[in-house]
Image: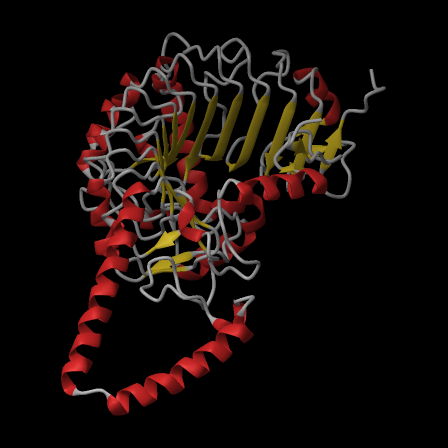
Amino acid sequence: MGFIEPATKKSVPLVTSYRMHPIIRCLVIRLAKEANFFSFYPKGYPDKNFFKGKKICLVKSQGPSWWSKKLPLPKEFDPNAEQKQTAEAEEKRSVELEKKKAQAGEKKRVKREKKKAQGEEEKKRVAYLEKLETLFNVSKQFLNLPEELFSKMKKIRVLYLGSWMCSAEHHIQVGNKDFLRGLKNMNKLRFLSLQGISGISKLRGCLAKLQNLRVLDLRACHNLEKLPREVGSLNKLAYLDLSECFLLNNIPKQLSQLSDLKVLEGFVISRKSPCTLDDLKKLKHLVKLSINVNDYDLLHPEATTFSMFENLQNLKIAWIGARVDKSQVDGKKDAIKDTKKQASAWGACAIKYTKKQKQASAIKYTKQQASDAPSSKPEMKKLIKLELQCYPGREPPQWLVPETLECLERLYIRGGALTSLGQIDKKWKVKILRLKYLASIKMNWKELQIQFPKLEYLEKVNCHQIAFCPCDSSGLWQKDSNQT
């Protein structure tokens, strides 16, 4: 038994979450406290050992933050609050007596000493920040970091300011974005996460100095519109996540210079973006790639570019936008009617297009597919997982065949105009198949078994013409261990 165990579910074949045994968890917390890994009271306030370690947490609390100049803790959370309260009361009375007796010169001396003490405390704080290695945001939702202190973290390696929770409720807001300019001093930074932080539209070229950065997480930065050209100077970057950045439509060509990149999430293909899919051919080490296509015409389904990624194991393509041709719609009322009728059939794509627009797009795409199909099929021998969303063509792409995808084990198709999954006599090695919102595909359970003889798990949602499947009420079917 290890420290972390997979949390398995009967209805889900893949492990998506993990857990820790309560006894091991208590032991880990105890060892972490002894090592000054993180030091906090149960309600989130930093305790007396807070500045002994090299790691800091941001927590949601009403008390002073780690950058506050008020170092003493709030009385209500101090274990020696009563004793201190008595001592403070006596000290207060003695101070009042001294004030009455003190002369003007004495007051100035006390003021100078107090100012000197504050300066020494500030020097200690800066010296501590210069040695800091990790800053992790646990539950802080409103970031208001002072730029003058943020820029002092010259030796920091892990900077996790974003949200680590999956829930959309845990979004993070930033007051003043100027603190990001302090990133130029963090040349030892290896991990940077701004996930889920709203209010950041540009990074203002603050990435150029991060020569040791390995991971850049910009997921769900909903206001991000453009990546700086300096992203191409991150020579050691291996992981870049741009997914759920819905306003991002401009990716610089310099992205193709990241020769060590292994994971690229949320790459955008649009008419405004200088970087195209062909530019990514230089990224020979890519293992995982997800693409958002903003216009159907910009990525033909027969693109052979994917075969250039020799090590690609995980590929996701989502056609999320298209140009609307007003000539395809007879009137506003008809368009609204058709959209409502097709809402359940197209799933995530239903809101964007009317029935006639989708039919016209599917016909156009199918004709283009037949005329522009390449003579040789690209091979993606290492691809294990493939996900297609809102695929616009009626027939599957020519490369979506077992001969091309020899190692494919997981196939997910959601929404779109597909009418089939290819020829039935061609047998797949796919073990996990997920089909959602495919209203035009007509086949039965017997045909599905012939086409996917090694199938172990099936998820079928709103595919009403795929008949006689032994799925439960949730649309799930899983092969029994005793089933032959």
